[in-house]
Length: 180
Image 1 (cartoon, rainbow, N blue to C red):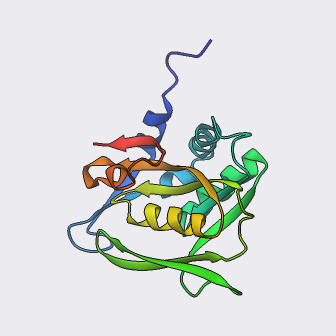
Image 2: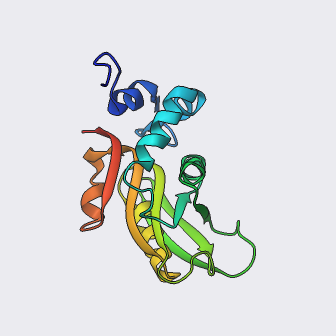
């Protein structure tokens, strides 16, 4: 029987976040998961929460640079599946496929190896935060272009006020903590 005094996963994430004002530019409040990553109990709870419902459903985890690498690689390891890095342009050797998109404060280009995924492999896409959805949408589309069947986008924190979930449309989105 669960201990009623144990915090929920949502509470664990909420208390492990740090707000950084005016980063990366004035007016933006950055949701920093660094304190969560430094807490082994909280980080283990996050990985277990993300793994729930995904074991046996996915063949690979794809993580978006940079914090999505940390969370995604730990998740892939915990589930016993491989990891696919979704990187900033110019960081991967060999043949790549790229996608450009807009952020809430600029634009970016990401890439994956052209052979990162075998046709039809089931992939869950992971990042630390869902904000406007630009990165998630570009990464999702990029993975589909290289043959993946993307089963969902999972994140630690969703900034609901920025509308990312709506931008992703019909795609499956899971967030451990939602900031309204």
